[in-house]
Length: 461
Ligand SMILES: Cc1ncc(COP(=O)(O)O)c(C=O)c1O
Image (cartoon, rainbow, N blue to C red; front, side):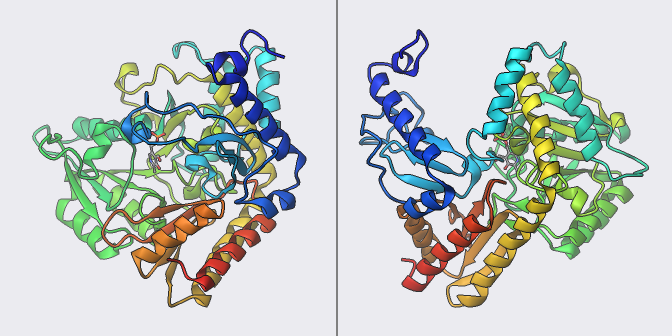
């Protein structure tokens, strides 16, 4: 059936063949059980007809624009599995680009979107007149953001920003504006960050990781090694009231999944309190992948600013925000906004997803521990190749002694249909990363660990 807006018609001259392949791909993914799919990971699925993928020549280079030959990009996905355009079956071990909290097209969330659309929820609208789901989401985030009985709760959400980068830039602007209001105008504010941070692709946070040399911002950045308590104390002792803000990601998914320790973050919190700096935790990676929703709650922290994104809407259109105190709500509307960010439907999905997290909290907690134990056991069993297990819960890394082993291991995993990532592009980085979606169970983790073991035994290069 080809309706006016069918894929067949809308996807150009090759639309009919692409749509047929997608349909056959979904049929395959829907018909198989998880064990059935696991048995076939890495294989070509012949029941899906071959087709000519749309070329990427009109895309920018960093998106594969100059790639030669037929592409092998994403065809269709269901849950934790997806098929590529060349019809190979993959187990997605990184939840897409770390945002697909419940995997691809979770049936309950898709059904909720259809029902909500019928009931009048819109995808987006003008941010001056937010629809009910966005407003209610702000209340729910405030609720999840505070331990019961907190005396100084985070009571406001700067919502309505589309991507995490805009949210990070908003949090940084808040730190700088609060500093400007409370300190001597001539003092240059200092922002303390951790080496290997990634707080998005806005220029302002990119200054915090040393980018754009020569285009100097009007603040100074001090970069510390994560978990080095002495340098943290020394920095705050030296600069004290000149420090406007401190930044950390609880698990540094952009630096080998280094887990920033609870004690270190508690010390940072004390230092911030004593000096008047605002502590910002970037929970774009860690948030929502938690039985307690936000990791700082599990760690017993009380930051001043919390950046939320990615898992918040489980990959159903981005929506991000900054959780904060009302007293720090110092930005005007157009100081930090995405005009695509009023996002009622994504907010509705976020509410449904929070409901799922609450219902599955015990299982999420147990599986996070299961993954940690599994990765630790690999390191114990292969000490000649593996240096350490990194991360916490679902956010996991395996650090190799040799960068070539990390690269070879990840290449072989890709060949075998396991989509993982590797950090090996900076001096000393040699870690393979996974971040399974919350649909994962022990069976999936066991499969992953078995494949890892097999490769580690065989040799990784
Ligand atoms: C820790 C962290 N902060 C900020 C961002 C930026 O988010 P976005 O890509 O949605 O702009 C990311 C994205 O990966 C991230 O991992």
